[in-house]
Length: 66
Image (cartoon, rainbow, N blue to C red):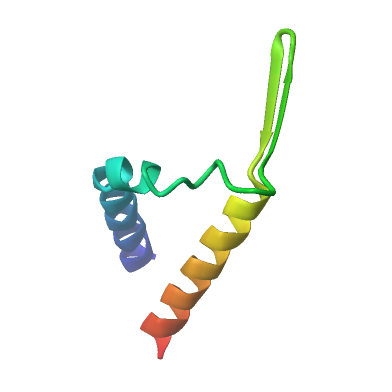
């Protein structure tokens, strides 16, 4: 459990440090990401971004377990 929490903390730290670079990639504005804007409400459903992030994380985990 300790190794998992340390790894998760390091991953969050790395993502936080790389956030300016990650935000320039266009994640969150891909075709398939749904944005609903109405008066007093904004709903955001990042479907395509979620799929891409899931695939990348799955490949990285698979690579480390190999």
